[in-house]
Length: 181
Image (cartoon, rainbow, N blue to C red):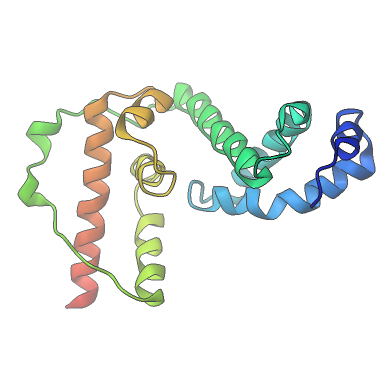
């Protein structure tokens, strides 16, 4: 899609046709961005819609020399984190964990996967993780956020983030061992 000054101006002026064109263009990769973070379609649609509205409000800050997909994906990721924080206030999903007491390095299995089927299997295992563990693990692995960034974004203790990441790895390793036996 060509993001001309005129097109951006039309969106900023709330031209419905331009907004619809932008939505049709952005919707697929906005939804794809959330597919690893949220399993619930209703939640995904809500986040996509709110993130799109924020993108429209901020369209004039978009640098036409940069990648639009990356720009709007950042808005989607941040909206996911904001919504998750709001949910967390009502429901305490995380508990503070003493990392050293809960895990030792020997608890984690190193497993190497190869091929498309193995990748699909791995994603199935990740989707089956408990919600809080899955979210932390996806932010770490898929969104490439550091443990510190995740702790700050989700307002968690650093050791709790480490615990969730290692818990996810351990669960996935056990599942992989079961499937290879």
